[in-house]
Each structure stands twice: as structure tokens, then as C-alpha cells.
Image (cartoon, rainbow over all chains, first blue to last red; front, side, top):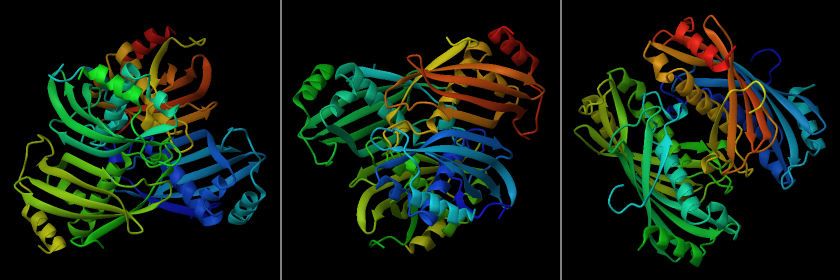
Length: 138
Length: 138
Length: 138
Length: 138
């Protein structure tokens, strides 16, 4: 596990995620980050549905990916991630995508918790804050 | 226009829709059929939102595609389609996907109109029936 | 395991695979079928790369899906599949997608082995035939 | 046209690009940026195939998206883009995604031209440099 990361999940590159350059399309990484967040929430915070059951949604408000090496069909990728900078209605995830220890990409995503109906920003629930603090031991 | 078809719409194959075989991935065709249906509804029946505004959704209940020739990045494909067999809550679309007159695929999709909340089957609204009849001149 | 099936693999519905109807988009099933085929090949026939290393590709030439019940975000779906009707350059897969024993969809896909460069049909290699026969015990 | 931009292309949000939050999924924007780049290359530089015919590919090496407002099914979005900072094997695109003048997202992507076979960095061809300079009038 890279220093500073306590959670990681694997994905296997699907054939449908490749493109005519013979490698994983760069939008696929964005999906994998989401898959890892969902797994993180399931492990640490009762699942994304726990948020939804409170009438909230977590929107993605920002995205950054630095691609370092190509991923190919059937590669098993490990997505290390951590949740940082939770304040107000906002939080951020940082990621390292690796393949057998080789760095494939680094990334970060920004999120805001909003009311599911109005999409107005709503403070991150305290139980989620506590779950993150426990997961990250910060 | 192939015999029996009165509506057609174009799509251009996106790079993201290709795969490592160097051709359009076979799931892309399924998306293009939907793009063509949406365009058909916009042209003939006030748009898909007209259905939604009545508290209805049109679910896809069946799908068949016969792939005849590969499509490639940046190809312009023409999707000919017609709506047939409207009865009760059900209707069907038939398609020919062509590239400069060459047959790329034939397809059909089955649909059911349902209540948007309960997903219970609900008869196709009469104005939609009339719109289809006019579009297909049947 | 449903009668007649000897292989099955699980997928978890990704958030990106849902649509504004609140359910898994009907093109997602097509991707899952492919994920299950890749897993089947890995388990029974040395992986899809074994085909590619011989200069072959397996194209998808046909597709049929009957959707029986909606799948939702985070559902774990079991894809039962079997390879049947291998002859010449062609073979077929049949599928049942289930969620805790409830039928979500049935499907079939048709395939042809082709030369990777020319895309000309090429007989299914004998080792693949034997691997299928052993997997299906036919 | 926003100040500093000379090229723009439209996309219509596909139903398949929405998610269960009822809005366009945040990975869809990444695809639209690519669609706009391909259109830009077609308008200004002989199409992406001109690059491929020289044995080159343009890889995406970096990505940043700031999401400002949700996009919905059937929205027509205008993607304004410009190519900047071309040097060596690298170039960058900046984007504004708008809906009827309302800002939906800003973005940038980083690219490297590489040898299609070896994926080794290769200087941006001079004709491409000239095409960009003419398109951007810099």
C-alpha cells in the first residue's frame, strides 16, 4: 500500500474499456475511480445507499487525472484512495492507480453533498465525517 | 432510404466507441439505436420529454442486433428506423444501420411504456399512437 | 446454478451504468455478457489472450437480450453462461443474468473467429474446441 | 463565442450518458471533449486519420474538469476549445462547455504525439503545428 493510503480496490480492464489505440480509453479511468469510491463507502461508511437514504447525493464537482502509463485489456489495476479535506458540503479523494506496483495514473476528484431533489449543497452528515476520520485515522 | 423506412438519422463513430480490435465495439450499436429513437421521437412525437411529462417512461424490454460489417472510428453511419407493432403498452422498432449504403447491422428493440414511479405497464398514450401512425403512414 | 449451466461470474452494477430512469441502462447488460465471456475464457481456455497470440480475434456477430426485470445500482448480478454450437468459425453463448435467483435477463451472443489482421473467418482452433467441450462436458 | 476561442462544436446529451442522479454522468464530459477534439482536427488539420497515416497517435496524458452546472438528457451543449502550448511532442487543449451561454464545465486535456507502434514520444509534425497556428491565429 503506498504511504498515506489505507484503502484499495481492484478492477480488471474490460475489453469494452479499450479503444482503437489498443489500450484502455482515458475515460475508463474516471469510471474506475467511481467504482473505488463506491467500494470505499461500502467498506467504511455503510455504502452509498446510506447517503441516498438520507435524501442526499454526492455530486462530482471536479476531476483531475495524470496518466503515467497505458493500461491494457485484462490488466488487474489496484486503485488506492483516500478521502481528504472534508469541510462543509465538500470533500476530496486522492488516488493512485497501480498495476503490480507500477504507477498507471494519479488522480483526484472533488465532491459536494447535495439535497437529492433540489441539488442544493448540504453539509456532509456527521456520521459520514466520523466514518471518514476512522477510515483515514486522521 | 431502404424500402419501408421513412426516418433516418446519422451518427459519427466516436473514438471512445472503438475497442482494441480497432473497430466500433458491439455495444456501441445499442447506444446508436437509442440515439436514433430519441431523434425519431423529437421529429415525430414532441420528443421523449413529452412522454416523461405524462409520468411515463419507455423501457427497453428486448434487443436483437445482427452485425454484418465492422464500423470504424469516424465513420458516418445512417440509422434507418421504423416503429411497428404498437399495441397495449408495447411497441417495437426495426433498424438498418448503413454506411454509404453498405449494410453494417440490422436490429430491433422492444419497448413497454410504464408508469415512471411504479414501473407498471401503462397503455401507449393515444397521441403517441397517432404520431407513430402519421410518421409511418400506416 | 440453473440447469444446463456450469459456469457463472458476478458483476456489481456500477453507478456509471445506471441512467436517468434510475436503473441499469440496457446497454450495460451487453458489457456484462462480455465480462462473463472473458472470465469463462480465463477459467476454461487459457484466457482471451491465448486466442490473440495465435493471430485470431473473436468477433461478435449477433446479440439478443430479453430484459425481464430492472437491475439497480450496486446490485450484484450473477451471469450464468454456456458455449454451444461451435462449428467452423462460429460459436454461440447463452446466458441467464440473475440477482439472488431472480431472473434479470436472458441473452445470447453469436461469434466468429477471424484472422486478426484480415478479419477473414478462420476455423475455431481445435484446442479451443476441446476446452469448450471439457467446460460444458458435452 | 467566448473570448479567446475560435472553434466550437455541439453535442446532444444521450440518454445512455445520464445516470441515476438524473443528470449527465461526469465521465460523459470526458467523451465530449474528445468528440470536440476530433471535430477540431477535421476542421483544421485534415482529421485525426492524417496523424494516424503518419504512424502516429495522440495520447491523452492529462485531464482536468471543473463541473459548474449539471447537464441533462437531450441538452444541446456547445464545446468551445482551443489548442495551446504546442511544444516538442506535447500539446494542450482548453475547453468551455456551455448550454445556451450558461457555463456547464471548464476543462483541459494534455496530449503527447507518440509512435503508434512503440508509443515513444515523437515531435508534433510541422504541418500539425502550422494547422494549429492557423486555427488559433497565434
